[in-house]
Amino acid sequence: MIEIMIRENEQNKRLDHFVRQYLNQASLSYIYKLFRKKEIKINKKPAKPDYITQLGDVLTIYISEDLHQSRTIETSKKQSFQIIYEDKNILIVNKPIHLLVHDGNQKNEDTLTKQVLHYLMEKKEYIPEKETTFVPALAHRIDRNTSGLVLFGKNTLSLQCLFEAFKEHDCLQKKYLALVAGKVKQKGEIELPLKKDEKEKKVYVSKDGLYAKTIYQPIRQFEDCTLLEVTILTGRTHQIRVHLQSIGHPLIGDQKYGNAYADALAKKYHIKDYLLHAKQITFLGLKNNLSYLNHQSFTAPLYPWQITLIQNLSKGGKENDEL
Image 1 (cartoon, rainbow, N blue to C red):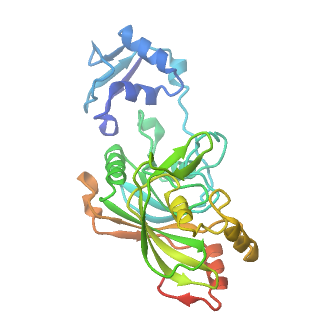
Image 2 (image 1 turned 180 degrees about the vertical axis):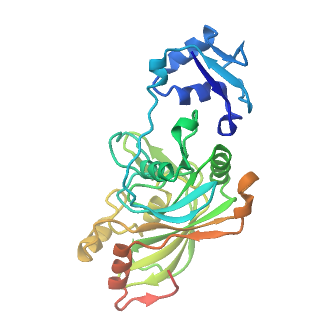
Image 3 (image 1 turned 90 degrees about the vertical axis):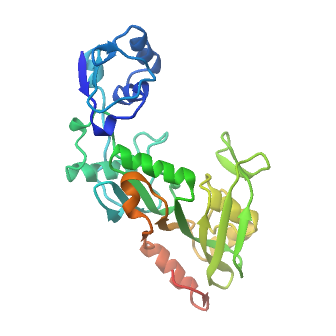
């Protein structure tokens, strides 16, 4: 038998979701069997799966200790990220390229999430033994080969608030830097629906897709390529890469969405990895315990290899703005 007191980070959750997080090695069918057999109780009374947990509730689960002890938290001692901002509620980091934000299908691979968890555990801000189910987590994702800002919530309320902000879009503004093939001479907007092909793991412009809007502006023009500042008003998978490809200016070095011209430029300038950097985030409408962050902006500096690349291209290039 296991007895759990519901604390601040565990309140306001569906009970079945809570139990699934707590018994993360147990099958879903096994968990619902426990509910049916009334072996999951709240305050000594049989509980239903859709019960919403309340602060101070006592949850009792009649299972073996072996299953209870199987819960593990994976971490990594590496710290390849840079800290941009941190307080008791959130952590904003600058992620390098070639680093997954979370496991996905690569269970044994190093990830940003594992690194951040180790960092917070070392600071004693996250102590797994004191948390029943909550684990500090990502509020959003960026691709492995995209660098820049990634946000983590340190407690349930903050994480929920960030989730809502990224879902609503008008609660925050995200800006990126992107190095694209060809000369882009003026500001523009792209409004094209995007659809993901799960089998090919690729995104296409499709009338059956989800609404997506991207705004771009050239900030540095080079001989045969352009550095853009890109603002996304929606957060679709591969949105920037596909939208810029659709107007004939794919990212240089993007093997999935590039074209022959972009490939030739990658070879010419020895570019192995495309430059797409989540440069800045501005909070506009955060709610609850994160409202104090509204109207603040946070910026991630470019990594040295990105700065060197731009400096090399700048010889003879036209500069329109600061990075």
